[in-house]
Image (cartoon, rainbow, N blue to C red; front, side, top):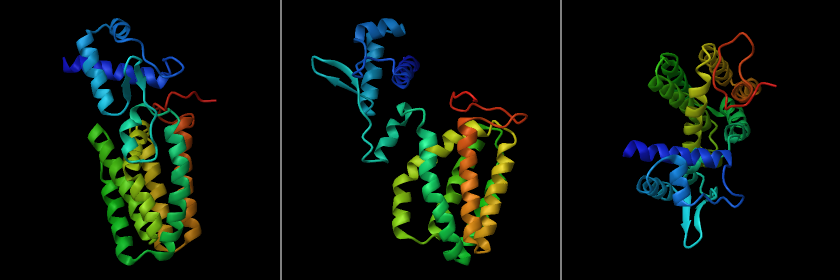
Length: 246
């Protein structure tokens, strides 16, 4: 029964993503939806309750079941709504990362301490040793890649910037998982990212703020390009958000 409920939850989320609803975001009636999904109304009701708990749906008395609009005021809280956020979430979020991470790398090159530099080096050393031939490995790589960026933010030594990053932490780590599960299917990707990280770290070590910012910008722009468009011809293939290469 639990598998059927999870199936229904996923089907409803897919409907929301596709916009396969009425203009006002109303779902079909429970009876029609149960027939459409080929499940009992008991199973359907369990799925609806689960989605209501997550804040995805709301039942309006005598009106029906509607999709709730994500409330982005509390960005961490809105993470639970990520399953039905627009498909262009990742490219848009990477634009925010460009604003934050590039400036952080520039500041880190000017302000980092020897201890902070040592922690960044140790993080990259661990990152290099992670095999990505399993889902767990991909997630571990995503975590340490996120940690490396966090260490750069800390090295920038700007309290306001750190607070902004804290508000984005959950989204950054989840976003990294989404990206890495897609991009690491390209066998050339992990070594290339490693070189980009090393170049940024080297610039930070040499206190070259221009090179540090440029290294971070190159890294994030390439992630955005590859995620949306796909790898250059002749390189490995991966799922890239369902968008066609122009």
